[in-house]
Image (cartoon, helix red, strand yellow):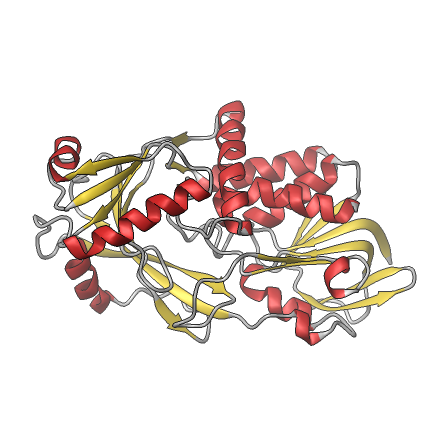
Length: 367
């Protein structure tokens, strides 16, 4: 049996960032990833947005790690030459009824320490974005976009430079805490193959299943998970806006917004579709929902301009109709099982917050 200091389960962006932080502190680290590549699921199936920290409850872990992680991420990308851009974003009220929501968002952002927002009336917003239809907009200059694949590749390279290793095709089937460490079994081996003093469960969509496989782990510390699927549609033709355009949030998500990739191409999404099993197919019929939502702020959208692109799935620990839940990171001080750190509900803004979340995991491990 191979013995190491730390096992990180899951090679999404947060798992890679955590492995980097733990290896940087001098620990021996192995990353176990069930897929054949890193970042296959939630980490690569999103809007690739660097969030400012506007949409989260003040004092929440999401708010705190988003705001601090945003600056860490911008600095990291600048230092390593990772493609990114502070393109900015407008959050818009499409009607007078939504102005109250927009004012509430501005107040919430200030509570999170985001003080660079600018309030624009209709005329001011249209001077910046002539194609935009709105009653008012909040401008967020700290919002940006990033090449998430290049970012994850750099995190992995950093971790490996600190002597961490990654093993693909290694689906964890059981974990057994013992007085000598945590014994770990994977799908391809009948007996435990690894023993670690610390296990970080960063398995994303499967984090709850990994936690359930820990022998003797108290079930009350494993929150239920709900899958919120979000489809994206690509725009044919030139992007109508130079910055990201977001409506006011909707239950389960931030509304069907327009984002840009680093080549300047526009895409719209995600919507919110509650599902029971992982399914990345994009139903072309959902375009009808997109046309209706987008035309509230871009009336010139013509029929036939939207093409199915891709879908992502957010692991939520709140059910449909419930208030949004915070990130959940629980260590031995919470659940009482030595050496185990679980990360649940790692959805947006997980990409933005990844470096800050990794620092938090490292602090729990070092406590």
